[in-house]
Length: 388
Image 1 (cartoon, rainbow, N blue to C red):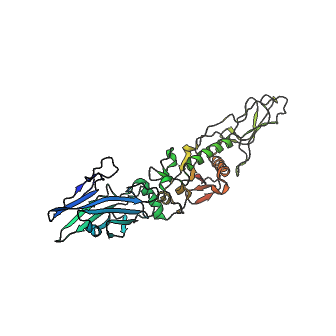
Image 2: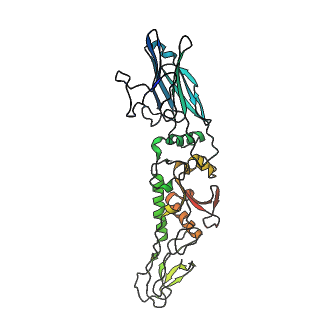
Image 3: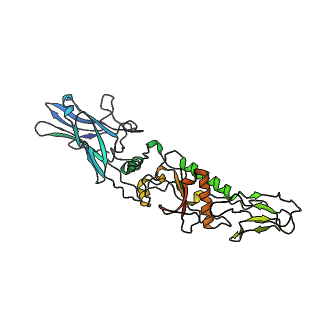
């Protein structure tokens, strides 16, 4: 668990449930090295390593840059030597930057980490920043006591902080705290590189998807029953069922098939009626509105949701402050939705119209890729982007 040189002994991390004691009821040191001087044992002890930052718990040893990393030690049986303990935080791997300061003396010292992780974009998790903590005590006669704490156990970023570090490296306006990280209940909402996502509003992505689901269903089931079913004495061209409100670019789109001898007036798509339903030759209203009532799960058509900054750049996004990185945007590709009587372009326009209602016209738009804005009925469009 801890690698100690020069004859030191190791002990479990305080709070791990396996801690020892130093013989006086206090927690055992994290590491120690000893020698004998004038018949008495002289012991260099590392007592504690802790990170103090937003949401940090006592003795937390995962960190991000900007958070204080505090190390405490002592020289047992020679308290006057405490101020001469020399500390250094040594980076492990080329992606971890030098600590500030690189070294320091004293019983208690404070460091901060730095990052050398690039921001070119990738589709894999970033490596964690990690440090080896070294405490040493030079003694007369050339002897040195030394304790080394391995980054495998101490001062190595956990996944939450690897993700948070990306936001710091990119300099985004949104800087998520640990409380804003979560594992989403619906895996489709995570299109990033980690098992966790960051949201500017906890649960916001799931709520946005639910609202879009509800609105799309309403647009697919908004035909109007103009004449009650069974009404008689109508002229053949009397409208029994009319399409709902028109949708930008494509107009009104019916979602009802004629029943009895009622007839479809207007366009047909894929053999299904997309216009009004007329009473037909017998003059009776035989058709009930919305008899297709196709159930839609937009979850099956989400092409992108949360994206961490590296993934967002790899996807071709031109902005580091994309709503995807805030966990407040969805890309929905409805072209293969199994909706009878709807072309892929009409489906794209229906989803955009739903977004216009849910988040407003400025925050609902059709794209190809991450940067090309298109009309919703463009054959080149591949998704609708909805953000809040």
